[in-house]
Every structure is written in structure tokens, then in C-alpha cells.
Length: 249
Ligand code: CA
Image 1 (cartoon, rainbow, N blue to C red):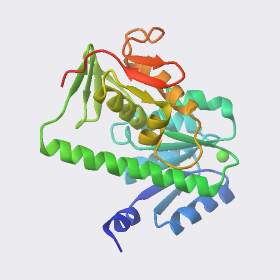
Image 2: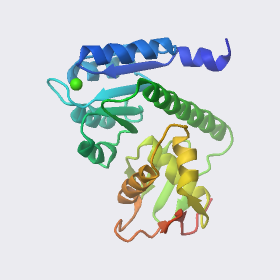
Image 3: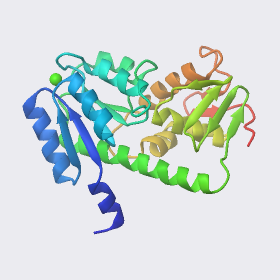
């Protein structure tokens, strides 16, 4: 067994779904992939498990008894212990997703029900891989000097995984953080949607490049002084995005 596989074995996924057959199906496939699985059937139970067991990833259905998934997501994000835990939302309704992925709730990914289990597994793997990659990068960064990136009011601390705008801490999702870090690390360069998709989402399943636009929109709302007239994260029509403004190392 390789080290990477051993690592994978230790990953704990919390599956929050009250529909027993769906929960069981997801748990079965996660188990088959080598993950440890915890299952919760209600919002309060999900929060208890998440705070107690610190899962590496949460798969969260929106329609739940007692407390819905949106509220669970909000609470996970606002607790220090679970603020950066990757969350993948399951939803039967597309309309909910803007809120879910957005400013308010900041989930990392979503799937519309009914979904393909194979694709769900691909996304879980990809999300955990990104977290691993990020941890590895953060570790090697912290061994050297922290490479803080600054541009105007925006300051990005790679090691702390934190972004400040005018001394105010921004609550970015993992993806938004990686997006911003990519953009700020390449000031003045046009980064295509495809490149961003590949570097931030990085998996082979079909993801619309519109996903990039949606995340850029939320990112702007969090870091741009005037989100309607972005000054730092510029759109390059038909191509992608460019970070304008001088990034000072
Ligand atoms: Ca449900």
C-alpha cells in the first residue's frame, strides 16, 4: 500500500442525509473507496458529529428534518473548528445553489439530485486531494518564509489560509481562496477559464466553465471595494480573468 493510499484510508467523511437508502448508498461507495464514514440523519446530529469528530469532508443534503442543510452549512462555516472543512451540498433544486455556493453559506461544491454515484466519488476524491495538496503546499511554505501577497487593500496569507481586506478578515471558501491566490500570484496575466477550472477544480468530470464565473462573482463580492466595478479581478471578455494591480511580495 502506498503512503497516499494509507492517507486516503484515514479520511473521514460525514454523510448527512435523512433518506436512508441514499445515505446508505453513498456510505457504501465511500467505504468501498476506502474512506471511513459517519452518517447523520438530521441537522443537529450532523453538527454534533462534525464538532466531535472533525470529518475531512461533509456531504450535506439540504432537505433535512429539524434543521435544514443550509443552516447546518452556515453553522459549520461559523464555527472555528469546522470553518474550513470542505462541504459538498446535495440538492434537489437548482435554484438553491446560488445561495449555497455564495457569500452567505460558502459550500465548496454541489451536486443536483438525482446524481451519479460515480461522479460523486470523483468529486469527493478531488476535494480531498485539493485539501491534501493545499496542506502540503502550506507546510512547505511555512518551512520557508510565508509568502504574503498584497495588492491595494487585499492581503493574502498563504500559510494562515487567510485574506484580509482593509484589516478586515474575509471568510473565503477553500476554492475562492485558491482562485484568489492563483490570480494574485500572476498579476497582469490573463488566466483562462479552462486553466482556472483545471487548477482549482482539477478533476475530469464535466464542470461548466460557468462555475468559474459564479465563484469569481462571489470572490469579488468579498474582496473588491466595489464589486459592481471590479478593480482587481478583471474580466477578459471571452477568455478569462486577470488580476490587475501590482501584487507586492
Ligand atoms: Ca433529504
